[in-house]
Image (tube, rainbow, N blue to C red; front, top):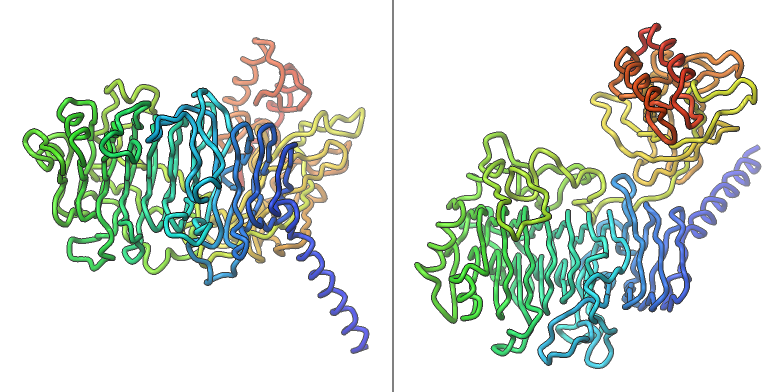
Length: 639
């Protein structure tokens, strides 16, 4: 018996070993040259080796939840060339992740290359050329960026994390690449909800182009957080940058470092670097003015080389100097109102709110900041939750960190102004800095990437259906539909650990949910459908095993739902989720009936909330379902 058990255990171990090995794809992104359309698979982890190019006319599609690990030895790097496209379209609960291949606790800045996106938008160079080599590769070796199409489209880069990029590509100082490098990227490209953590150079750097970005995070980078060069003229709203007081670059580290080109002083050729920033929270290393920090930390913003940037409605906290106005061209543009640094909050500067070199701002640089912004000598006056609470690391799980949310009464909750014409097209909010009450980093961002476990795919096959969808004459559902399932802790306050969206089959009623973050444990399953009552799984929760196939069936008995909160469908001999909560307020009642009735009068059809039987038409049959369930006074039942 013992020998049989040993054989069984060995078989299981070998099976798991093979599954784990099979999940690592080290060939698709192995010094590849992509000229066609490559589509990655979210249930596979990829090891990216060497320089991988998406050439003109080629594309790479990276589904939500995909993990790509950059190889350390070969300096794994992804380069989207001019005319190539990337479609990395993550979601809040399944971001696309580029990260280190190293294990927990051993990951560090520069473990792999980074992501470089190059386009054909106009740029500014020191020679006047309309194209240039992107930095980091060495003279004559870099791919080309720039052109004459400011509306150029390089694809979509949404809900993406880049952890530990920024390796030195050539071994020569200055040839490090950034976390996300954008060269000549056009305004038709979508870049939003991107986090760069522990970059070995700048977190974000724009070289010319016109791309607009929003909801960006620069976390514990080495050099600058927001580096702008060579005629970039985009807009950025909602950005968070946070520094580690011990990590700074030999070139000196700043929050903003904004240039035109490097041909000083002959760098007024156009297009001039002129980005507009709003609602940035730029946290430096100085929690207090006496905090011991790396001596290479310098300024919240270094504005130089005839750039014409403007910064509004932002928080600049805890730097040696708030802003340096560098050079006569910049200073003349400040005095002339072209360069504007207005309606921001400055706090906790060690030596000065601002300084200047190469000219004189009218009244002096510190007076300029004081007259146009709100200033505090200490950071605590800004009243953020815990902006310096990152040492040594944010506690795991690290994906629900509210350190930079303003407390009640914070001056950051008001004072924003969007009447300036430069802010046309920005979202008008009342608060200054990256956050009001809403934490837009929740779930998709990770503030402890050194120690978190890189997601492992776990399948959960759940059988369920909204009872109104069942059609007696066919024994099937009128249609398949998407539904979201949350995995929640099985003890109060039942926090969400993971979530996934899938489509239930109209014949089998089963949906395959892919979870990537929940560790093995016991969880409640909570469903959310467009017009069915939110339903929780039975009392006590369900066992879940990471990296395995898991199964749960709501339909076999009422008791499969918490509080027996399901409805028997006699013709099917199965239990379904109560249909009819059209407004998703947790109860099926008159308000749902009214909403459906109004849609009946409008002859509504297609994918609408009030189509509670899923046949694509809102009519009397939908009203009957809602009326029947409202008479039962059903509502959400949960722990």
